[in-house]
Length: 436
Image 1 (cartoon, rainbow, N blue to C red):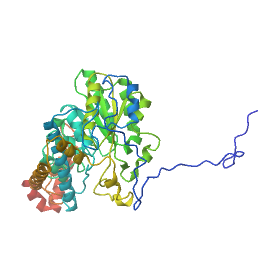
Image 2 (image 1 turned 90 degrees about the horizontal axis):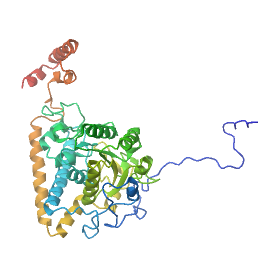
Image 3 (image 1 turned 180 degrees about the vertical axis):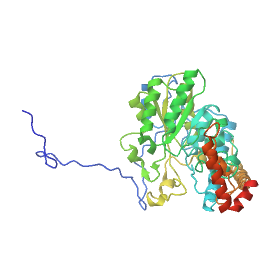
Image 4 (image 1 turned 90 degrees about the vertical axis):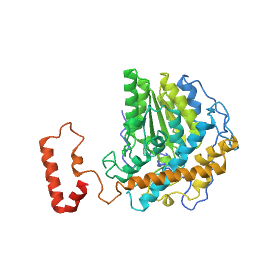
C-alpha cells in the first residue's frame, strides 16, 4: 500500500532542514581585496588544438585561461598570433581612441548633453582584439559595450556622437537609446537594450549564411549576467544542432549592473564550461590580453569558416568603472577591486609589450593619447552643431510615423498632420526650427 504524502511543514525523521544558497560577492564596499583565490594560469602554457578538432579537445581550455602576454610583457606559447608591429600599433591606437571617446562622452553626459552613456573601460581588448581577428564583412551582433568594434571598422566618430545626442543628424532618427548604434555598411547589427536577444539573432544569421553558401560568419556578444537568460540557451541549442558558423563571445566582467557574477552561475564552474554541455567548442581567454583575445577569436572564426562548428569564448575581464552613468559601483563593490585586479589593464599591457619589442615608447604613447583626444574633441564639437539634449534640434516630427510602411496608410497620414497642427499651435517657435 502506498505511503501517504507527508504534510507540508512536517519533518521527515532525522533529516536536516533544507537551506537555500544565495551567492555572495567576495568583497563588499570597504573590504580589503584579496584575489589569491583566483587561479591565474601561466602565460603560454595552454595547448592550441587544431582549428577543426573535435569539440571535446577544447573542453580542458574551458576550465583554463588562455594567456599570451606574461609579466615581463613578452608574447609566449602556441597561442601567440605573431602579429607584426604595425598591426599591434594600430590595435593600440584603436583601444586608446575608444577610451578617449568614452571619457569625452562621459563628460558630455555629466554636462547635460545627453541622457545616458556606457563606458567600456577595462574591456577594450574584448571587442577590439576580436574586431581585428574577424573579417570586416563578418556580421557582428554586439551588446552595448562593443563601441570599439565600430571604431575599429572605421565608423565616423561624428556619427556616433550624433546618435548619442539624438540630434537632427542622428541616422537612427532618435529612435534608439544613446550608445545603441547600428550600421549595415559596417556589418554592425543594431544594438538591443533587451539583453541576450543578439545571441539567437547571431546564430540565425549564421545559419542563413550557411544556407546561402556564403563565406561570411557571424559573431555575437553578451555579458555573463545575460547568459542566465533563456535566449542564451536557445541560441546554443540551435548553434549546436545546425553547426552554425558563429563565434559566441561571453564577456565576464564580474558584474551584471550591480549583481555579482555568482547569480549567473560563476560559483559552480566557468562560463566557458557551458560549451561542454552543448557539445560545442569552448575557450576561456584572458580578456585583458589583446593578443590572447585576437588569437582565440581568430581560431574560432577559422573554425566556423571551415564548417567545423560554433565556438563559445569566455572573455575573463573586469569592468573597471560603473555599469553606466546611472550607476554608482561604490554601493556594491570595494573601491580597491580595480587597482588590485590581477590581469591588469588591457591598454597598458599592450603598450608595455610594444615597448618591450622596441617598437614603441612612452613619448610616442603620450603623443598618441593627445592625438586621439583631439580627434574626439573635434568630432564632438562637429556633432554638437547638430544639437544636444534639450535644444530641440532633432528630426522633423513627421519622421516618427515613417520607416514602417512602404507607403504610409491614410489614417497615419491624418494622425501625423493632426499632431503637427497641434504642435504648431502649442509651440509656434518649433515651426521656425523645423523650417531650418
